Image 1 (tube, rainbow, N blue to C red):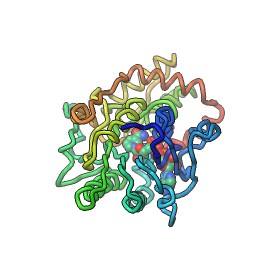
Image 2 (tube, helix red, strand yellow):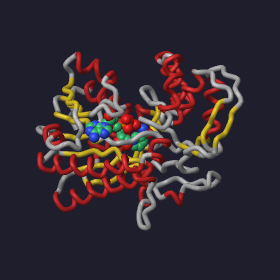
Image 3 (cartoon, helix red, strand yellow):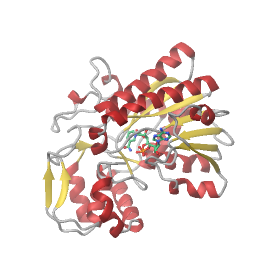
Image 4 (spheres, rainbow, N blue to C red):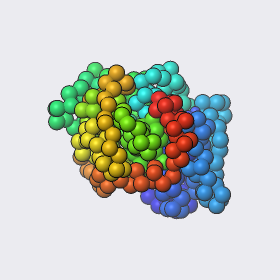
Length: 338
Ligand SMILES: NC(=O)c1ccc[n+]([C@@H]2O[C@H](COP(=O)([O-])OP(=O)(O)OC[C@H]3O[C@@H](n4cnc5c(N)ncnc54)[C@H](O)[C@@H]3O)[C@@H](O)[C@H]2O)c1
């Protein structure tokens, strides 16, 4: 797909992932429009492009009448990333708020259909996978796309809404021919990440020099954190190569325990703190790692950034941009809010 001069909408484009995608699309010469209500996104993330007149920004809530229709007008590709979403603490503790994604997704998809956009790319999630497959951290299991099926057992209202979004897009393709792809992101991290996600939360604690150093869960939970550049690359490839609403995992196959990530953050930042585990806090599934063979096959995509390298880059960014005084006043709230 040639991105030069292509009119492209990124919903939620002021977010961590959204703004990183915008950077890349601007670089490729696309005509980018962003719609975002800034409920969790930050305009600073895209301000340089706005100032340089490299993109158009609409501030609006896509659930409000008329906003989605206006946003998709004239667009060739719509990357739909807007969502009521946060980290583990947020999605566990805000069921009703995350349920509004059902309405948000339905509204934008119908607007895309009406406007006859060429392709919709949907930011789905590892949260669509059945919880019951992800309970034993000692089991070596890689979640592959076929494991999402009856009996469905998605992760919170957030995961159910993502699952319904994927299924809606597939139905729209089969019944009405609207082309789409769903990208199942697995715990993205990197520069512009926010404190309600584990890697940034732990990096924030290190910046503040917290001792004891609090880690939520037993620390044994396994994740496959996926670096933002790889997420962006996979999302673009999905736009280029998938038409039929297929969902594809974008995740590494590295199995990292949270406790090991915590130890590496302490080591790299030169902190000598005692780790204190809090199993009573929101933890999420104990074993979530993607199988990324379908992405290799369909997209020719493979993650390029190893966790250890991406983690160091993320810490370097965080330590060089954040003000500990301001962080210290806000961190507690940021861990479970957006
Ligand atoms: N961060 C991850 O690890 C991860 C993993 C899986 C999926 N995702 C998905 O990727 C997308 C981007 O997530 P993120 O982590 O970068 O940040 P995020 O959750 O902050 O992004 C959501 C964006 O949508 C905007 N938004 C929310 N409701 C809106 C509305 N009604 N109208 C207009 N804009 C609205 C927010 O202001 C924000 O900019 C989301 O759809 C999220 O569910 C993220």
